[in-house]
Length: 88
Length: 215
Image (cartoon, rainbow over all chains, first blue to last red; front, top):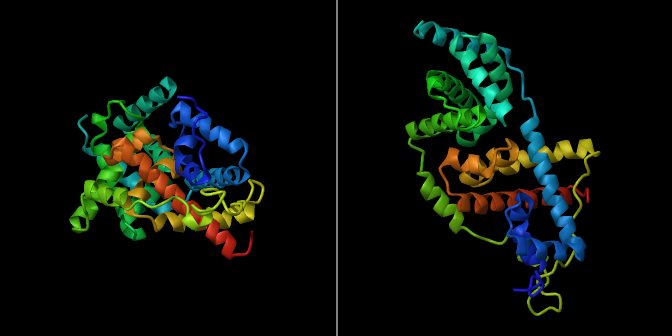
């Protein structure tokens, strides 16, 4: 089948974005997706929105969180008790 | 990859011989992720903290069974998820994951509201009828910090399996396969639900920016 045979419309493109970004889109669909993007500024903007969303999610994951010394101390004590119970 | 495996083995060996600094290092590295993941199951912060603590103990109790088939991080997350599920089950709030997945997969809707596209009788049917709004660029630190908070709230509003998947995959950076193994969902369902989750949070962020008059 010719990769150019059926052009994607924007409404279809937005349904393929996750597979496109995760690299799981079959080659033929990836070609159609790239062809669509090349001539569609709104879908390019949508893809950029999604990339920013993912970047923000990753930033949430990189956040160190509050340093809770009390919790760390409790966990340290727990580790000591656990190790004391282990067979020598 | 082999370096990472070797580092995991060294950490596990250090734990077995009672190296408190090795455990403290592990806690420092994973505690923030543990808390974020636990809160997907257990909303109450104090209860989530207890789940996390129980998960660390469960990990130590089963450290002899770590075989290095997955990364240490994935193994730890798997234990945490099991402890969190057991906590929910004890409170009799747990619906089997298969039932939740079936419900969420069945609740299909378009990723973007249909009114954002030209209708079927239009010359440009199925194409955008207006540009999607630009999101803040990497150098707009203030706007992005605010948007991160909106994102966190949007994730917390998702159906529970979608929350679990987006937190593991996009917040904590696991692969789809790792998330499937931890949660016990198929890769097809993982992909479908990750796509739904991402589409919904993107829509929430866009709405937030539009309503705030920033774009």
